[in-house]
Length: 323
Image (cartoon, rainbow, N blue to C red; front, side):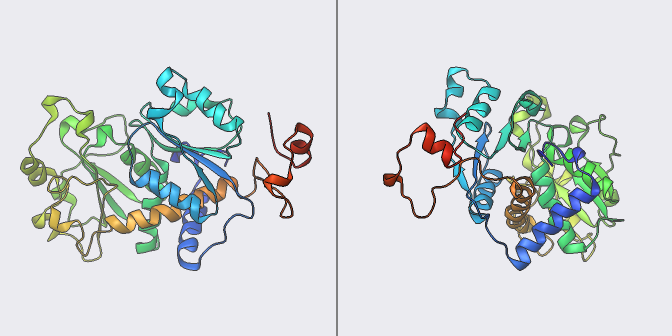
């Protein structure tokens, strides 16, 4: 792997390697990198879970997280995404994590020489969310083959739906969608069903956030209307299989996609998903960076910053990249 842009680029073997490493990190522990690498997290859209779990994963692996705030950066002066990323590469970053509102934004980053991890692109892909979901499913069931998965909600605007449908189908699960007609997407090769028709047989019910910020006025539902017709409520919960699980990428619109009292019910793995997000992202970072030396070498132990004259010759001698 050189980058992680979408699940479609990963083979079954690569997916399972990432999943198994994440579970191993969680159950058996891990060692930080021998050399201190630096990652910049560029979030052009708001985020809590993805951004902070990447920061936690980076710290757990002994990495530096370079702060980057779009609102106070040269993005506000019109700097392109490519030039911003090349700047971070030039000053020594080893990898970039990027969330961006534009689908396939990574197509414009061909000239970069460091790994890019897609933290979500528009309504396109969300591979790291997909991988943490896969970790959670595999941890519970020990397999993907033959599992019945229903992904319910705002399919049209969901990068989570696309990534999970692709990966779970590749791994042998049976995936169906359930959504209001206005949020269905015929471009995805997946059947749409009525949630009540499949709830009793589903092993996994994956709920999606209603993305109000992407909707037009005619697409709106009241909380009660949506929960009754398309959400997880007590009536549907009572019909679920004993060992079935409820998933949600969060943030959760309580009493919309899921009744508030069910967010932490016995079948819900919503918060364990978040825990697994740290280990899944550690696994991804390890995959991309474990064989790459840090781009800026640390000072030898016997030297301190005060002892060293930062001339070009000294920098070159210690292996610090200045280009």
